[in-house]
Length: 498
Image (cartoon, rainbow, N blue to C red; front, side, top):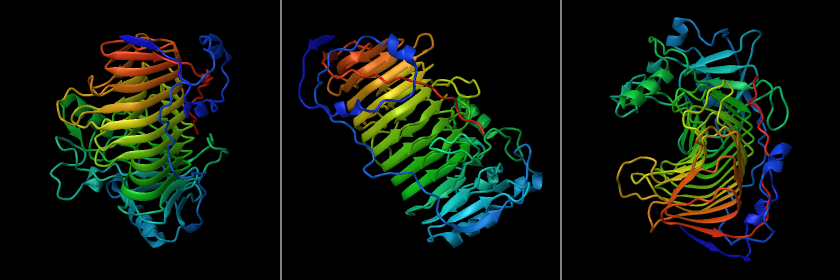
């Protein structure tokens, strides 16, 4: 490793990042942190600005029509006849169609003791919102036949090599605009801890006509080397200006929210699935102009996975969120479309979910790809990330899989400014890898304090200020600079329960 010592005084946008810390008190952390270096400014690097929109807290739309619940359940299941043919599909879909274009909401409300809706797949079009009142749950069908994609040989609810047999539970119509899924809550504030409206995918319950759950199918597929045919909870392809607000998404059979398009706002939601529920990602956005904030996410895969496979991923802001038992805040593994201008700030990550399950792949912040789906990832800024019980706090790897290909990953202009990890498990380790000497990792580590500093590194150009993690390895160059010392002071709130 070649290590140079330079003092840089050119202007730095990082300085602006140092004004916003996570405002939670944990005095012992600050006391344990290494002493700060003298104040100055490190070398200029491109700093992410995130979503180009001005995003404010969403407001509930006017009510177009109200549907009253006709069902109740004490165990999240219904009679065989209802499970075979969910009774609320047609009336919810008819209401969504009737209200499309009005800017109003189809409200799902309780009726006395009836607080349940049971539905098969639904489609949301333009200028209409599905609104679920607090205390009300929209249950997804457990019948694989309801999700079967026509003209596909893969059968929904089975394991095949293609894995394309199921339609999503809720589809955001292609080329639709200004739609949404929202709820009401009994709490107040951005992170209300009261009761919320819920969409429950019931991935933990046996499929209709089977003894296996959707999640068991997913685990079996992993063991057998196939792909599960499970429905995603919510999916949008080529949508514009979609909002998900103040709603709980629970127990998806597969991903909770997959979005491709221009303009996604996710604000004040809960995603609630255990850490051992395979492939139940929280939010997977592609496209441009995305804000995900003030949300609580626990799931059995990535809490967030920014993807750039068939399209690029640009101009995204991920801020003020809390993650539990997930695979972390991730980018990739599909990066071939290019990822740029991603701002990730003021988030906490816990390696354990609220059920006591440890993440099955316990990461903090991660960029992952491989030569079969790699591309350029640039101008990514992480500001003030607090981690507890995380096995792999910082992971940057273009070798996520061992497959060979020609789509070479390259990660550059990556800034980690303010990162703290506490209570790390034994043998915690971070990874800093470029693809080769011609495509090194370009990374800045400012104000980083990990309680376990073990790391591996290769082919990386790294700038360091006030960091107790100093990567070393073949082809690694480290440049020390001066800067303004301010590490986040961390507190880790519990996942809110009803």
